[in-house]
Image 1: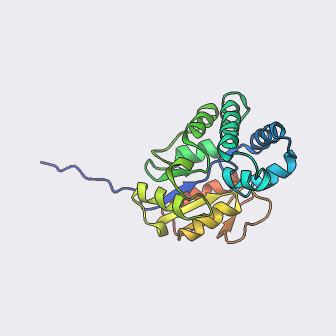
Image 2: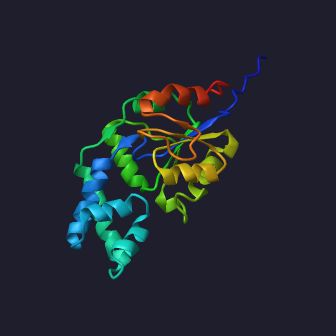
Image 3: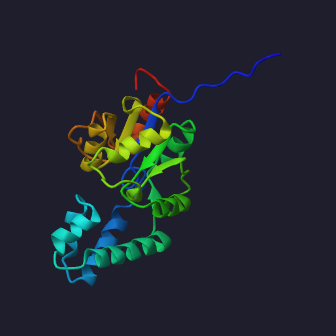
Length: 219
């Protein structure tokens, strides 16, 4: 009797940020924050500048310290959910081929957004959703804390040193570095401090990401 050979699982893992890394949502985020700012009589450009580097509750504390933060958050969520339904989204070039080219169980999404919005955006852009998705509701500490990426690794059954983080933002790069992972920055004109490699676009990075996932020593 011939015994069935058990195929080994992935030995290398890739953890992707979403907005700015796989999905081009810059214009959407600016529109949402502009609409929120206008509702509250605030300068849209200043609000967006703060929002780029802070989580929503921290943004409200800085730009609208006298307002009820939960009411501010509810208004923001309403605007974001409407944008998922009616806004125009696009995946960055190379994203569909990259994600479908990765072995099942070898990659995850780690986002500061919420899962239902990510799924909505991925459905509209045709991107596959992996089995592991760590969103803002899954962790008490967001990026730049290492917690989101460490949780994703745990759910994949991966060691941090076997994980590649693909990010576009300084806070995400810091999060991956603090988690003890390899970090590559994409979709930025200049290198992000701390990132181990820099690629001007996700499309440019895709061959190296696939090589890393395959365990290539040259990745």
